[in-house]
Image 1 (cartoon, one colour):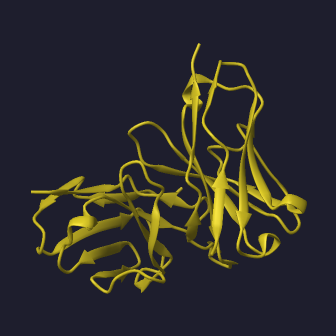
Image 2: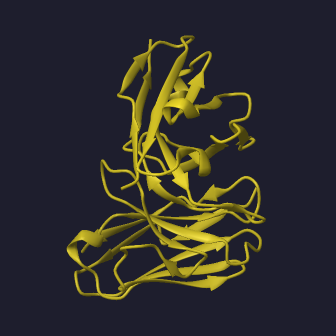
Length: 123
Length: 107
């Protein structure tokens, strides 16, 4: 069974840094792209970016390029999303999700999801 | 960036009724459209890929159709567990984008 298990909730102050994690199991972690999706409080889903853990090829949505960093450590089957300087507007739920393919049209849909990590940024 | 507009924003129906949810793209996405379901406090659940292909384990009452700019998710006979928010997502153009969601609520 495919499982993506995310790190727990965080409460941080503006200006602080943060790195959240997503550990994959039940499948070959290095062979499938993992992406990140933001959901701000009471709002819809936003596609942030995606990484291929096999070679760390990373692609960002322009809205998130330069705002976050996506990485992966294939030795421990874990993907990460990090901020160097948090803002209050980074408050939200962050989901990691796996896609089964990436073809000429782009990354496939997310077929397995983590449980989400709630990030609260407040002074 | 392709904008996906879902309608209606809220749909109020009773169990047993048929639900029809719409997703319109600002430009053609061919058939590269997926649908997800999200219940309160839960992660989204993948329902349909490539406009009309049900994901593994998704009941047959869920069906998708459309191509180009106009897409529909149909739930043939609503079950109590189907009341949730539904999102469409395109992957045809970079970046992939989601619609704003349709809330399906019990009437």
